[in-house]
Image (cartoon, rainbow, N blue to C red; front, side, top):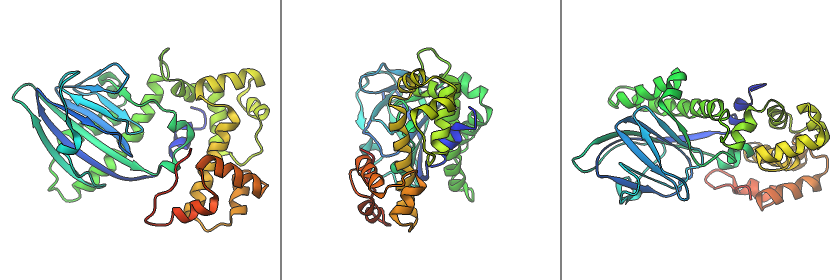
Length: 319
């Protein structure tokens, strides 16, 4: 990706903590998890695991395969599809950030060893295109082998579980953060080439649309128009607008506005800059225009957002 678009997209995604667990499950077994306010990873170290999402075909993960849930979507796990499932809260009632746990469940049948991680992040800081990622990304064993650092890190995490080692917990937490970024990079590189791959993944790999996305992500304060973004992409205005909407799922200027408001939200949370200065930094020379755009995106004013994102509070999410 020209200009390392993926790095630009992931840079604002501030990971705040990781919970991880090692599962040893004997068939028959099944667990149903509600939607989580974090990204989730499931790596099969031994055996097999069926993954089911509402309205989608089940996916069977085999040893050495990884499923990534960028948005923490609700799903079920089991030794086979349709297996009766117990609620995750009954198996793991507490999942604090920074916590580690070992879980044993199920019957006397074939064993599955599963490594799970939950990566918490500030949802207000994620990029618009990250929000457009599909509910689950599945990386098979061959893909992990092609991406040696990713496969090797997962293998070490799954195989070495001696948490008594000095610093082992911190190392594992940092390793999960690395796995998350590597997995997204691998998914973009591998799945974008599939003819039926997610449109947003194909957008990241599309030379022209990728160039426009990189410009929006890193140069959002410039006075972009559809025409100037099309020129950046090297396409005609009409072809660019149609292709962008098809792959990204929204119009170019709407995507630009979302990126600007993402940065504005970060500046409101992390700095004491005046609202007018923040508006200028994200491309607005009219305080009224900035105020209206921010309110439309977050459902609140910049001043209220700043007060609500003080330490110990929960920020508003994009509407």
